[in-house]
Image (cartoon, one colour):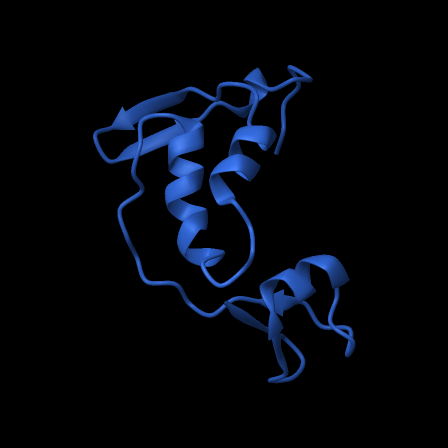
Length: 99
């Protein structure tokens, strides 16, 4: 995936943008608008994989391994409606509120 700076139309690879932080012109890197899609899975890891695999498709990254390494804790979903849920992030390693 190519991302571009908010201050110019210069495009760079997603991995370069992640490593760089800010664009050379001082702008923020922004991805192109992604098509809406269903988020698969019942747990945090499955949902993260379904969201990130298309984003990192052009990069040399094992998304499943990265997600499994990063999410070593559960984050239960509290469903308000059948299509609206809240992710309880305070169950993480610090047990602290994260905003």
